[in-house]
Length: 209
Image 1 (cartoon, helix red, strand yellow):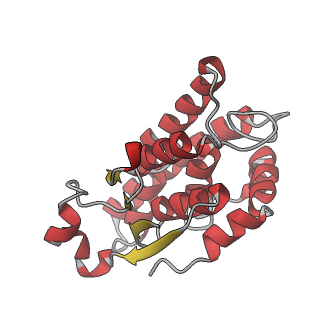
Image 2: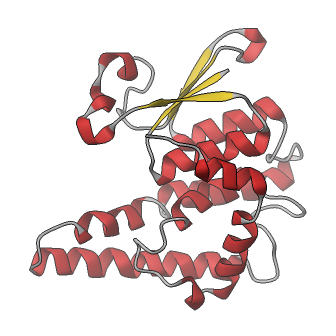
């Protein structure tokens, strides 16, 4: 059984959704980031960047245990392990790589900054930070909306990929981003489509705290 060391965050939800969609048995090991538990030696031993999520898989390659940190790396590992939601053909796989990196490099860090500045005391610094990162977050929603025009899923046809799970983890927090999905109808339709999937629903329902 895979151990998912995590907390109730967008990056944590990426992995709980993927594990449910892939039908892999797992148990949650909460890492309370509000109490600094991500700095404990037992966690740092296999997640040296002190960030959640991370996993321990007792049945890794060649049947040997393996640990994986960074949510994108975890998704790639799980896709390789199961042969699901990650195309085998390289040409079909490249868009999954592209949109997974797009999420990791932008559609995560930018809305994360929106969250940060909204929690700051009112004043010029808060206003500047929010305006800067909110504008970039909305630009990224626009990029995603254009990509989803005439498509059911972000990077693949017929079924979602690990890129969809990665992006969904952050789109789940669109209200905290101060983004109305109605402004991005293709994103709204994709979001509803993803959230209607029973396994995805289980991935969001499981307790991560």
